[in-house]
Length: 156
Image 1 (spheres, rainbow, N blue to C red):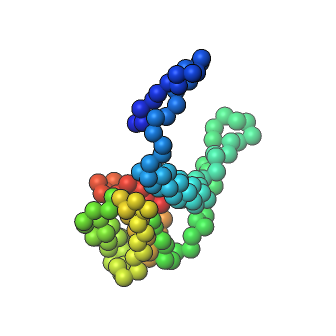
Image 2: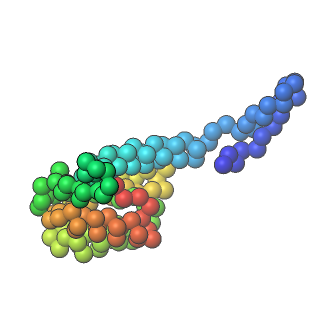
Image 3: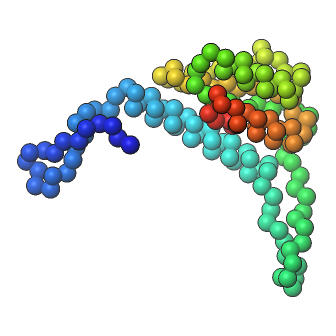
């Protein structure tokens, strides 16, 4: 929702509203963050579709009952080092919370490998953790736990 007040030009016959204020630095920062989030979401979605979405169930020739879907092989070879991007507000304890969750799923997690990226405006922080993934179930549970954490906004 646009928070800038609208004004109507005195000479306009159609009375089309124009913005009374120019875009502020805050607007530009939000747009940069939005672009970054959208880009990361699209990357994550692409990887998710490639690794998690099974093909549609095949039907028998008589089309009466579906046959079981073929087992989908993962594109990821386990065990492997798997990077996960976590974004949230830049507040005290955010990095510690992400590290704590990572250690629950990977006891060998090394916190010195964490990569940090601050948003342009400094309001948000992107944290990249690299965990040793041993199975798809482990990764799914880690994503679920991070996604439901109250300090986390986005997990990719």
